[in-house]
Image (cartoon, rainbow, N blue to C red; front, side, top):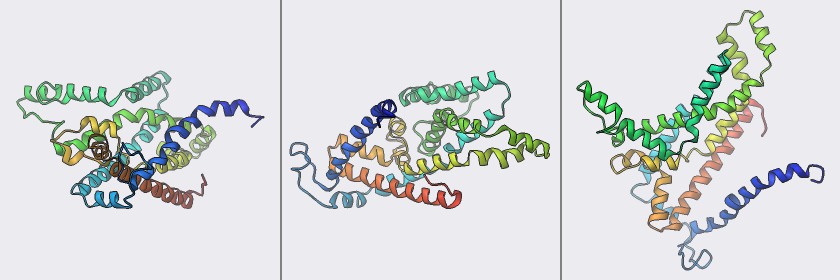
Length: 293
C-alpha cells in the first residue's frame, strides 16, 4: 500500500461510496424480520420472524407483480441485452470515422436523459389527443391509439424505450473489446478466403465472448430489477395490471403505506434471488468458457 498509495487514494471515494451506501444499510435487513416502527427504532421494534415474507406470498397481488417482473425482465434480457452487441458490431464494420463518431454520439446521448424527460417525449409523440403519431393516424382517418394507457402495449413500450435509452452507452463496452482484437487475424482470414460473415463468426464474436458472458452474468444478478424510475413514471391505473412490478409495489407499501418491514422483506427476497442467479450463471460460464472471475 505504501508503494501504490496514490492509486489507493484514487480508489478511496469509490470504496467509501460502497461502504456507506451499500454495506452500512445492510444492518437494516433486520427490519425484514421485525414489525418495524419508526418511533421505536430498529432494535426496539418487536421480532416477527418470517411473518413479513408470509404476508407477501399470501397477498392477492403476489402472482401479478412477480409475473410482471419476470416477463418484463425476460423481454429486456431477450431484446435489450443483444442490442448493444449488434450496434457495436455494426459500428465496428463502418469504415468512415466521421460517420461512426456521429452515430455513436446520437445513440449514447439518450443515456444522459432522465426518464422524466423521456416520458415527456413519449407524451409529445404518443398522447391520445395531441400526440404526433395519433395526429398522423387521425389525418389518415385511422383510429387513435392510447399507447400510454393501453395495458396490452405498455410492456412493448417499456422494452423499446429501454433499448433506445441504453443501446449506445452499452455498445461502448463492446466497441472497446472489439478494438482489442488483433487485426492480423482478419488479414489471415482474408488470405484464406473467409467472407465477412465467416470473419464475424470465427474471429469477432469469439474475441468479445468473455465480455458478453461477463455482462450476461451481471445482468442476471439484477434480473428482478427492471428499472424502477422507468416503470414508475410510465405507470398509471389503466396499465398497472401489466406493468406493476416488485419495485413499484415495494415503493407503495414502504414509502406510501409506511410498512417498512414488509417492504424490506421483499427487497431481501429480491437480493437473495439475484445472488443465487449470479452464482449459478458464473458457474455455468466457467464450465463453458473456462474463465474464473
